[in-house]
Image (cartoon, rainbow, N blue to C red; front, side):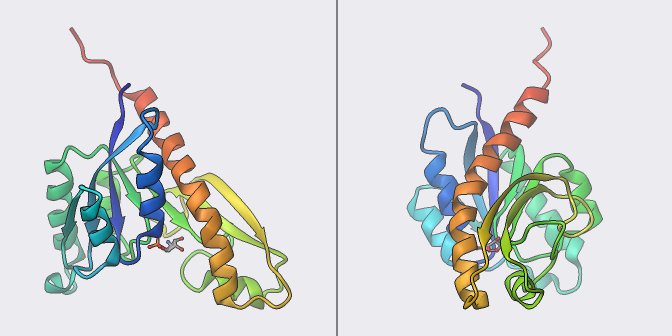
Length: 201
Ligand code: GRF
């Protein structure tokens, strides 16, 4: 079975990354994680990935200062060196430039902890509580230039309880992310694989 070569980009804990690595242990999973990249050298997820036998590489964004594109060019080189076919953003906390997004259009997805189009950006759980929402959740979506604006691939919902804090709500949503994201990665990978041109003879 052909499996799509994916890179998972993280900045910290990497619990969504772990959920994807678990799913990818099954032979019939259509995506094969070949690389984990972090912009933070001390990200806990890097250690988890390397313990799992994966190429786990840090590219610190700090030395690049305000030159976001130079940082991204360094990432792009590593990604292409590993023959990556799709990028999975999983808690990657850098906004990407139009240049990088254009290199990976239709080949990059993200997980966001809200029911998009509600609450793009940060502090999603507090914003849902403050608005009196009775429902919250998470969305997996294709990445486009606008932050958290690309087409939604799949969503999962949870109730917001009367005594919820941002922390308790985020834990409930995170549990759903771990179910949803591996499924969304598989859906996106199958879609990309189905469009792949056969080698001409
Ligand atoms: C998740 O809540 C995800 O929705 C958001 O960042 C968090 C990453 O958590 N984009 P983890 O690093 O996967 O544990």
